[in-house]
Length: 301
Ligand code: 13P
Image 1 (cartoon, rainbow, N blue to C red):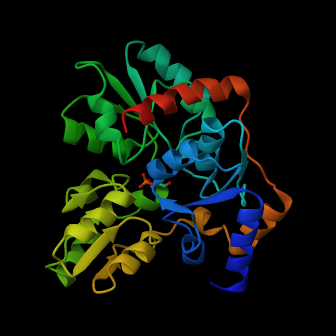
Image 2 (image 1 turned 60 degrees about the horizontal axis):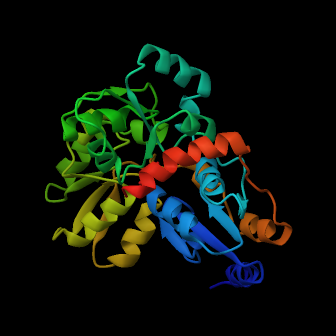
């Protein structure tokens, strides 16, 4: 641990705080996190945390979810400008319009969404539990899944139920093309390709495994392959390489890089713990309605 990492650990103890970090953040932050995980694991960790302060090394919707789940805690987002372009693809007005058009549908909202959008939804999901969430809904019920159209189409194909997709995507995952994957597969014919469901359907069609960041890490552990092609954000390679130093992990593209997640530095975290700012809060009425959708998800996860 370097001096700044040590100083952050001391501040965390002084402040009765925990540091939650997503796999996509910088390696030096992953190294000192209390909990390192995917979106679901981090929401679960926030919900059960007994600390007074939660520092989120992640993007805005993650800290917002923690604020919804823990209204009595201080939620720090060291870089409030770390956003999620996917979450920005749905707003309250467009959900209300879709609700009018599809009055009988269940609205399943990916956790990568704003609190206002969650508040207008029936249940949330993450890439880890989307299939479970869909299985929990009454048979034959029409489903609108938002804001990630790629995840919705993937879920339609794995569950066999009709899912109306939203016109949104993660621009980083969506930029990966089947041509790039085919070229890489040609160079590494024995390497399985593990991809995140935020990738395009024609990319997922080439995947040997599709799952959340945690599921991809699990797949890498179980696979006998010594080289694995990774179709998600490059930050996950830190944990993969740490757990399996004997294996080679190759990013499907160097462009699988989330600049928002990488904005957060050790310096930002240190400053945030010193000043206890910037905080993320959600208005009570929005928070209550969004919490109902998150709680329904957590109850079946
Ligand atoms: P998971 O954390 O569910 O793998 O999803 C990745 C993501 O979208 C992070 O913003």
